[in-house]
Amino acid sequence: MADQTDSTAWLQEQLHEGPVVAYVGLRADEPARVGGVIGRHKVVSYFAGCGGMDLGFHGGFEVFGATVPELDFEIEKAYDFDERCVETYKQNISDRIEHVDLSNFDPKNAPRADVLIGGFPCQDFSSCGPKRGLTSSRGQLYRSLIDYMMHHKPKVVIGENVPHLARMQKGQVLKTILEDLSSTGYKVELWNLYAPDYGIPQNRRRLFFVCVHPDLDGFPEQPAPEFGRDDGGYRSISWAIDDLKHTLDESVPNQSQYFLASKAKKGNGQGDEKSKRDQPAYTVRANAKSRVQFHYSLERRLTVRECARLQTFPDDFAFPHSATTNVMQIGNAVPPVLAHKVAEAVSNFLKASKI
View 1: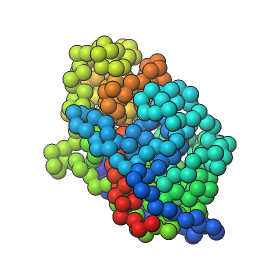
View 2: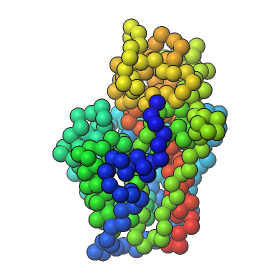
View 3: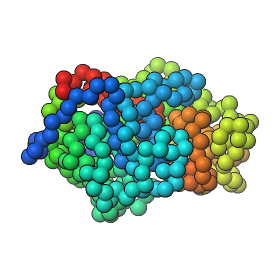
View 4: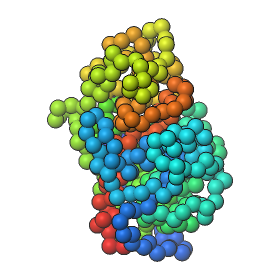
């Protein structure tokens, strides 16, 4: 399992330089007013995928026998390029999603919102991807967040991506993205969150880019870890999915979907090997078949539902496609519970803000 080092120290190591606390940009030439909102804060979601981040910001769902509280956010509009993701989103969240190529999308066609969220595509930044970084058109898609920021001036923007991004080109890729975000006039802070710290039974670490309008004082407070080795340990894969062990039908949606394979073998800690019963699962990957980890006690790979559980999707969140497509959607998603922790921090910050 990954070493759970302090996130700030980890980022310093990747960047080979001083503290990484916040990038504070200059004010934009024409800063817009940030008006107050009575009731729910409106959210626009870019790169919504199947809806993990959006579900987390809304809340009000049940996972692991507990209800995740509903928050004061309303998803005004969501966008994604993948038609199959749009279908999954409509089936489980709402029909307020549009099939759009955000690489050439004019932000004036999107509604104005208090909060913009978006996990921009990670494939060119992932340690298991082509590692093209910012040289590809897909690697430049984070700039669509910037286009929206410049046009609509939301109060808060939350971007998300993989931690390998911080190691690319000796930290230059991360520095470029932070500088581009801060050039809008927004204050920018980077959060490095480890999913098991927040009760998610999966070895998953993600970066969150937290951008705050310059007219607002302060910053959302980074969520404090709630679990760890010193206070009872992290939730394990068996804790999360053991009740599904003898179910292979659709009495639980997607539990009958899984990939056949001969046997587990030694892998890289992210697939094609047997899970360890008493530890968090390996990272749930978007690569299907050979990258879906094996069950800790059964001679099969994890089912689509078991993967969804490890990502903290509720059991009634059904994935309507083939096993390959469903695993891809699940693996690409932000775990809803992790997104909810970030959303709570943003909600508390907005409640305390005077504008």
